[in-house]
Amino acid sequence: MIEAKGLSRSFGGREVVHDVDFRVGPGEVVGFLGPNGAGKTTTIRMLLGLLRPDRGSADVSRPVGYLPEQFAGYDGMSVRGYLRFMARMKQPPSNEVDAAMARAGVADLARRPLARLSKGQRQRVGLAQALLGSPPAFVLDEPMQGLDPKQVVDARHVVQSLAHEGGAAVLLSTHVLAEAAAICDRVVVIVKGRVVAEERPGDAADLEARFLRLVGQAELA
Image 1: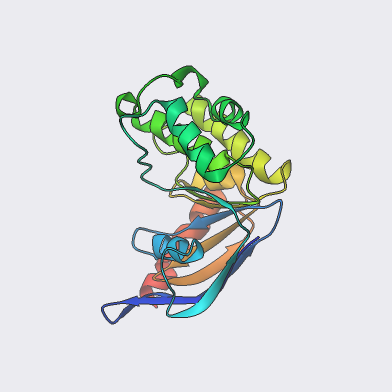
Image 2: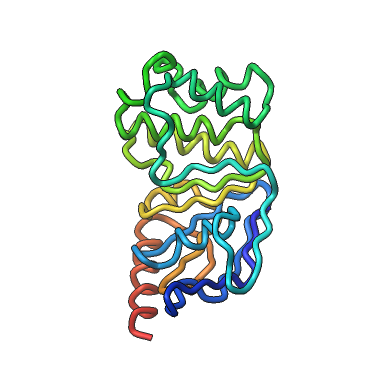
């Protein structure tokens, strides 16, 4: 489960997240949508315990598989070496590294140093490390970033299977509305630090129209 309960946070006297409430239950993929500067990253950091809220609380099933928008890793390590290092920290079964690499589509990159990976390849390694330990909750920030069309389709299947087959709660932050429409069971829209809608995504064109309307209304308010 992933739950935000009245989360609020200010920086320098300016409130960037105000009274945010939403819940992601087991077996659900919920999209977290909003324009740049809407408060998505601040909310995610509070959910993960990386930032203390001024008010409210977060309840997230532990451990949580987290893929940041800018996945880093350690450039001098190979893909397998890095994932083995992360596996020792998370303490999953020893055979999970190869399974995670295969599932994320990076098995053929096992010996390649992270420094020699493309942005999309690094993102898939980041997804593999999030999969380690089969956690009950996932927070994925732009997981399809840098992927080619086939890799996007494969990654979508992985994300959906985490929830629909594995029973995990998955929060997916994305700027790509077609991606949210294809993957998510529900979407939460945040604008100017406030949740302005929580609903079924529908098809991509319908979601785009509703998203633009909601953003426009919130910006004028």
